[in-house]
Length: 271
Image 1 (tube, rainbow, N blue to C red):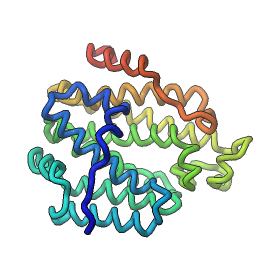
Image 2 (image 1 turned 90 degrees about the vertical axis):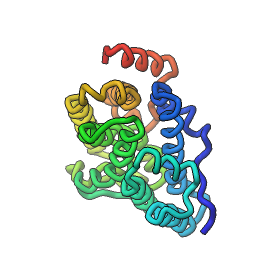
Image 3 (image 1 turned 60 degrees about the vertical axis):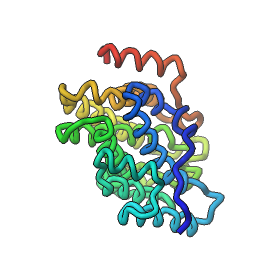
């Protein structure tokens, strides 16, 4: 087995996530960075198209084997798992979701999409709340927020994913035969795409609302990083909702000033 390595710290520290994690105490913040560097490392394996699919599959299976056995993990990740009692089934779920991304992606139903999102987002949230210092009462919040964040990611990355032959919008969202990845990249967009994007936007809004309703007051402070992420992504979702088809031309993003303002508003309890 080759030595497993975490993603470079710089790949996390310049992201929206970095804004959120700055609110954690130093020890928990560093542990969270280690965990998210693991998430980025396995996600990069799914996306590195210059590597043959077979090689990427082997590398991801090595990660899964190391998590299942406890042997071969990077030392700092192993320490975080032990120190915070992380359930390694959540980490193996993340790997399983990345394995699903190795082949052209298509989901027939929303149920299938939600299963995928549980692996790549909800499982991440369940592990994160342990690092943040939250109890089991926070699990429902983590699950709803995981779906909300991943649905928003899917909406934001429609074009980028289509270029990788991935379509995460379920076939059942289309009244006509679902569009192909190639068709999504054409101008004008295929019929029914706008309606499909709108359906996922509504679902994302519902999950954000459900997460807010499930927020345990006693864990509100510990969950500040998650609440900041929710604020950032709700704003991003609002931007997408104004013109869903615009994601085919420009990947929406938040400016640094907007992110900073949303962090401040979250810190002072205004959102």
